[in-house]
Amino acid sequence: MGKYSAMLLDLDGTLVNTLYSLQHTMSQAMEEVGCDPISMEQTKKYVGNGGHKFVERSLQATADRLYAEAEKWEDKDPDKAFDLDQEADEVLEKYDDACNAYFRLFKEGCIYKADPYPGMKECLDELKTKGWKIVCITNKSLPEAIKVLDHAFGENYFDYISGDDGTHPLKPDTGVIHDALSHIGKDASECLYVGDTNTDMQTAQRAGIPSIGCIYGFRGQKELEENGATVCIETAADLLKAVTYLEEL
Image 1 (cartoon, rainbow, N blue to C red):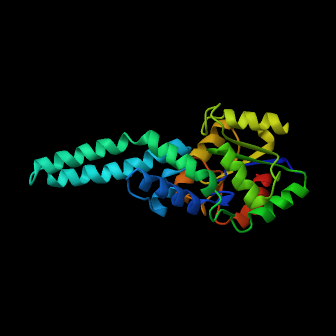
Image 2: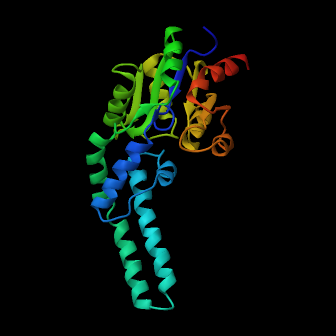
Image 3: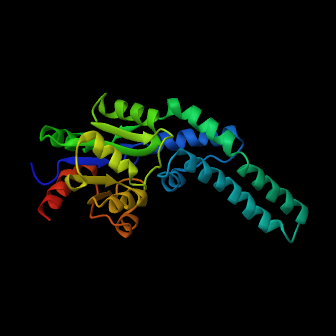
């Protein structure tokens, strides 16, 4: 075995394409509380910091649309502008109801069109045959994270899964890294981190772990490199090439 023997991977946009499930479920939740559905592009921007932040950003999109409309009416019809401003304020007050709707719907919706990225499982299978420990570290709610991973990879595929169980800070806090390492009996120097957002790259950098940025995921190469990606890959099937590159550094 080379100098690395454990891989820590993000879930959404890294291991599994969950974009459809996230967009579908959040749009249902938004419609349930009388707000705008969100687009795929919005979904890519809003995820990465946990479900509560995802709800907050989705509500803010509707509020921002209403605030912008209010601005247009300020000179022509101040009363209409005032009403639109009030409506926008009320949207932001729907946070608790929107969270309840989203988390309720996501229990079933989390596996909607949720498939591993092409080549990902084959790469991980090869690392597992070499004795690597494979861990998922996600800000997704833990029960849904387990459900998605079981659906996409099979039960008990991962050596450890860290998700949002309400008891600890989320990424980019490095506590999740130390927790995972204690469960698999590895040191940070033996690990590589794989993710697709600035949050992932910052987490790896703070923990002193080389990172592989997935530009096929929810963000882009610029964001990943600006936040410290050691190397970037264009497809999940390139994962082993990145490992070889990092082993030789």
